[in-house]
Image (cartoon, rainbow, N blue to C red; front, side, top):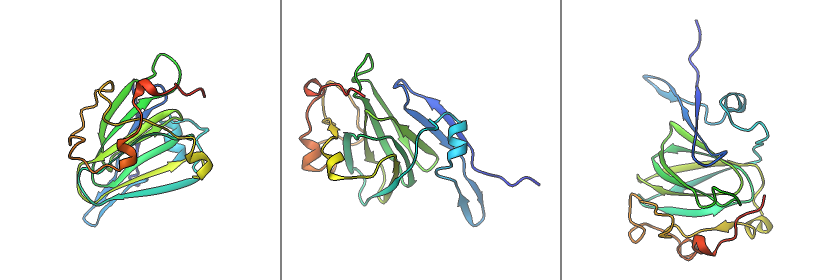
Length: 189
């Protein structure tokens, strides 16, 4: 008898390289089991075989309406939610025709997103006690942190319709004061 297992199905987005994965879980009366990151299955589903995880981080968000971003870090990122739900937004900051292109969606424990370098990412929690987990292709360091390109989540040019208005969201002062898209140089990768 075949043992049920997690399956990954990818979907292309309007931003090249930004992939959304549907992830199944295997459950019974005890609960459920799910592979969050399984390299061979993800590569078979379309993720770059060059993506190498070197660090995994968890962001615990106590309140509904916590918002973080938009940040384009100098690495690739694989994002999922362990518990809760989040509205996620991505903005292509790479030089080219897609500069400024926005993709938004909702993720929960049955979705994951692969974010290529040069694409800013952000999220807003839709439930209390949301655990947002992300694996990256480079270690965090102050030197790399200084190379982030950040973008204002409330930039009217982006026309992001956040589920919870930015005036009511829980946002750090640093994230509230990021520059607008018109003030950002496209990233040359």
